Length: 112
Length: 109
Image (cartoon, rainbow over all chains, first blue to last red; front, top):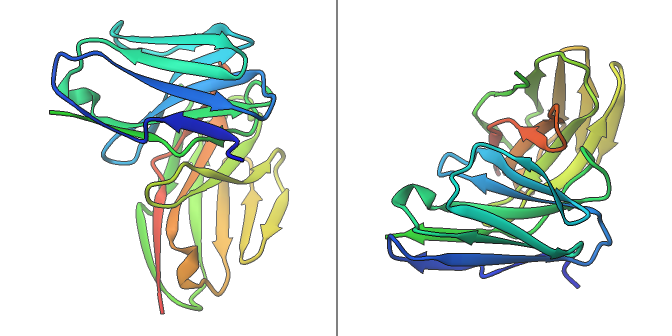
């Protein structure tokens, strides 16, 4: 039973399209995150949600919009995709703010 | 600004050849130093959290230590299955962990 699951695992799309990535955690955690890992493997925080409320919104283009329908889900919608959006996007959850993170397997987005 | 710097960027070892990975951080009220392991195509997997200088934690062939300005991940007699990217992270001023760029370890038999 996967603790943090993301779908889809792979996503290939054209520039200008809109796409979504879904994340679900069954750990009962209050805090969820989206991280972006670029081609150099650098993990960078994008968004943080605590109890469905946005806590962190790092310098991310407005084309990225997270949405948390409930504590167990955090989705990421991306509008007007650009080549530079190609990366692996990781969802994570944590029982505490600034606590240990539990990561999903990642969603590899390729924009052509 | 909170920063985490890891070295070396890449490390190649022979099986059984012990070594250490370094993680240095800017000092602004450390609230934990985290180590993760990441295998290709997978999400990072939690290894250790250290909170105070002098603290040490061990797991199999790995031992993490913490000083006031840096942390070390010591790998004793590594095996090929220890090959992975090792990431360290610390809490930011907000609520997220800030990660270093990682050390990619390759252990050959």
